[in-house]
Length: 298
Image (cartoon, rainbow, N blue to C red; front, side, top):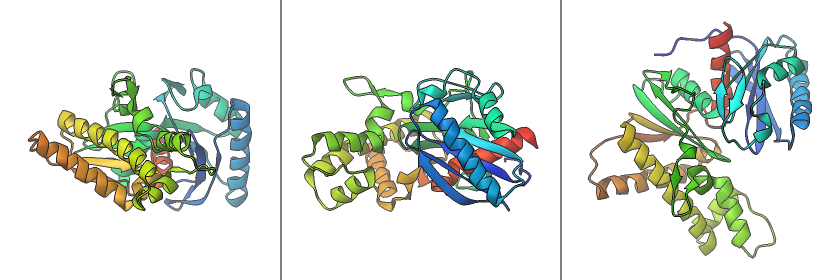
């Protein structure tokens, strides 16, 4: 099982394609949480991160470092992100060094899905699991794998990147087909509504019986359940754990379970797996980033 990290006071940040979340890690928990919309360029990102650091430092002057969750394939030692991500301007240069320069503090970086896996393996719903696969469903679809409480990283830090898997006639990725953000974009493109709806509102509309919302959410469920099924039959994990905000919706986990179990019955698969959500839900990436920092620095 995973070693216990030492407590310290950190600025924890989760950089996502739509929103950047941050908070204070102190007394073994995340507090003083806040967020801002993901900026459109690097300079704006740096400005917003400085403001976030100053805000948290006013509450806790003794911050000793910054723990960051980011999208993409992360070289944790060199502090460089590669691959295709929702925030392309963060890729292919020494981002960690740039962040240490603006924060004037030590910085750690880890892939966002890996951070969720670290948090859940450390003290969450994968704590006692021999093996687990994580589907982190947000702006894109992130993924991670753990075995005996440790990350399975792969040769190029790319293991578990399920969002890159291809499906459908047009060879689109699962990130394009299964993301609730992409689902909302499709709904709003096809809808006659004047108001632009977000994913939560579209789910509510679907549950109320609105036809277009039902069609769009059904398509998303189709691709996510197919992906979950493929992961189960490929890796036979003890647990399949769903992360990000959508995991907090009880009907989502229930629907995904039903669809995956139907596929397993159709194809006569006898494997058993527990499909559940991240214990720490929207905080999982920040908590996992803290674990990464403490593993590197303590």
